[in-house]
Length: 316
Image (cartoon, rainbow, N blue to C red; front, side, top):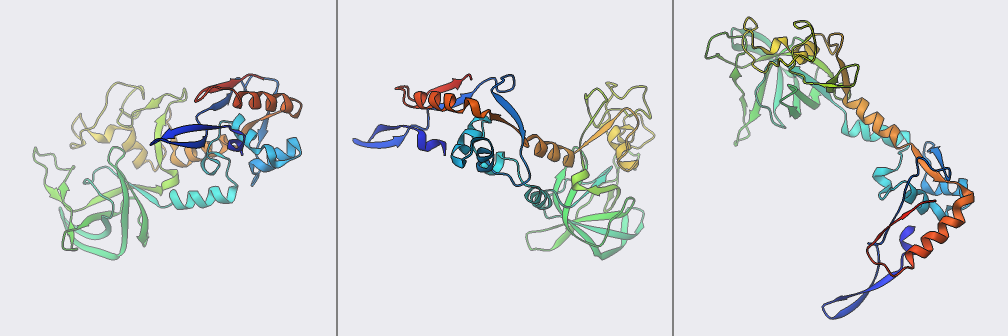
């Protein structure tokens, strides 16, 4: 690869001389986007830098040049993955379900969510222990809990309670204020309602307008306002009859309309972000073969210069 072309320099360490490769001498290409010496190339499924080198230069020897032109230092993380690897990584890191709540306690990884069958006021009188989910992560601002381990199925409007293991390994039910209580001191409740269930991949990352302006999830929704970008925000989760309440927000509307917010607001999902980043890696720049010898000579001259720890920028 590239480092085999780097010169060695002598360092003094503890009165000993050590010969090391001068990796601090950096080479970079400039203006590859607007230069006639480079081609746009889309990496094919399963194609490696060696394969691209062989395709354009007749040998795998210049795979390092393919990487250098595109400023790729780590092939494992920066090179375009084959579809099977991408899918496997997505299944591993982006699996599971997301549960949205209008109200819920502060959750932690490892908390248990159980389906509630019967309630009497704020008291839970019956649960189904065969239907449970283990919380993997919790996004308090988006009021979303993610799970990758579960038994049975949870759906929108299901009543649930949360439990957490104490120091003795016993599950304690987590209680939290009841947001539907309009009194100054809300009563404690042991259960809440799932407003919306979706796959983690389809979970909202952010909301935006048709002009690609990001919208605060706590902005007043169009259902209650003439404009999504109103300066009014609602973070208070008081009774819906009050003016300051979460029930008027874009996020609440997204939950209750099952992932379809009002017109004027669009959803950017975690999965869409992941796919766009994946596709972005597919397009690279390749030096045209007719410029190869000129560039190799320039790199050789640069590496053999007396400068140490310098960034050299090559303009073809």
